[in-house]
Amino acid sequence: MRILLTGGQGFVGQHFKARLKDRIPGHVLLEDPMDIRDRAAVERFVKDEKPDACLHLAAVSSVAREKAENAEAWTVNLDGTLILAETFETHAPQASFVFVSTAEIYGASFASGQPLDESALIAPVSSYASSKAAADLAIGNLSQEGLHGLRLRSFTQAGTAQDEEAILPFLAAQVARIEAGQQPPAMTVGHPDAGFDITDVRDACDAYIDALALPRPLPNGTVLNICSGVTRSVRSMARDLLEVAGISASLKVDSTIPCPSGLPSMRGNPAAARQALGWAPRIPWHETLVTVLNDWRYRIRP
Image (cartoon, rainbow, N blue to C red; front, side, top):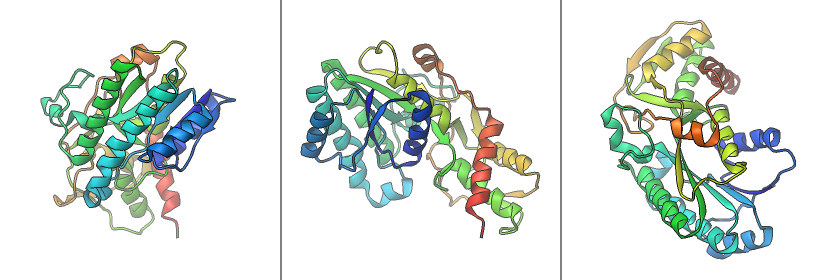
């Protein structure tokens, strides 16, 4: 299998490549530092390399970067996705196109408090989520025209080498610093009751590989939530990390710290992915906590 991967240098991309080696030995991974907004470069690469599948991860996803470069978020997340998908539709019509979308496109729909399935109303509340929602819908439209598109709406992921602005690393970094005597025994959070549906990034990458390796393709345009179905509050995650570390600390609330998702609570229904892919998260929550905390123990060492 010849797999074109975009965004391979990012947090998820690095984990995906490591899992791919174990899951599909003998695959050919195609990577190129091309700008996906450059239609000529994309078309040339796809025509020359003839991929059997594409996993499209590349996106402007950083909240901080999005605010500073809002226009780039739209050109990369929407325009770049369109160029890539249209190129596959034209020059690699038999290839599968797996687009990694985001659960943040459900936005205001999370206010229902219910676990959302793929039929939930798309109602983004940020520029990032809006640009991803537009791309998600565009892939759906192209799939009606013949693109072998599959949309995976991923909820929050956690793992090693993740930016500290993500919620679990944000908490784990503080616990590691308290443990090492680099910070007083107090954790600062912005929204202690905000809830996240978190999946270990290794489990999420297994879902992406399952989608690429299906013996028979799913109907064009299929949408699947990639999530655990369990919501954990910031407060409970901080408590769990402190318990793993075997230390105590107070929790201080600083309302000026933004919530990473901008949403009060997120919870998904993973039933469709379980049925379509035979996928389910397998890594225990405790193992994810230990993995992320150990990563930060190493990263803060003098």
